[in-house]
Length: 155
Image 1 (cartoon, rainbow, N blue to C red):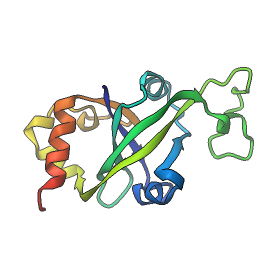
Image 2 (cartoon, rainbow, N blue to C red):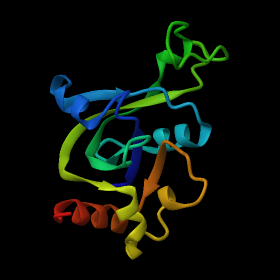
Image 3 (spheres, helix red, strand yellow):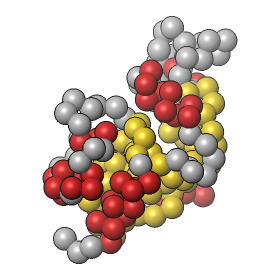
Image 4 (cartoon, one colour):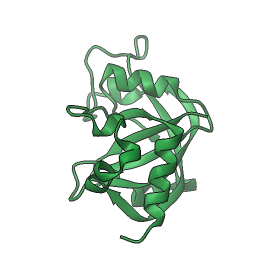
């Protein structure tokens, strides 16, 4: 099993929105970066991902999701009405992919970015590298466990 981190702006789609979704499941569409798309394509059913609230005050890890459907074409790319429309994409040339995720856990508290930065065990984490803006990144099993442990602690 691989581990991942997936970012979403809570005003667009939060972990609470996922909790209210039918079967607590949704598709993760709108990724428009080739490296992040390739990470989506590498995901396997059963992989776990940290759900990260970006562009929030403060940003932080809100919980865990499971990949329940592996990568498939993202139709928002060829939907002209979509915010994620890409004129180069079409059903014949989909370019972009998405996966389906299911809620596993909402953390008892979000783990804010500053706390992640202060954890020595997370020093090499992609999220914390200067300039890392990818919406989907791999996470090591040790980093994943560390964040779960941080979320279980009282602030």
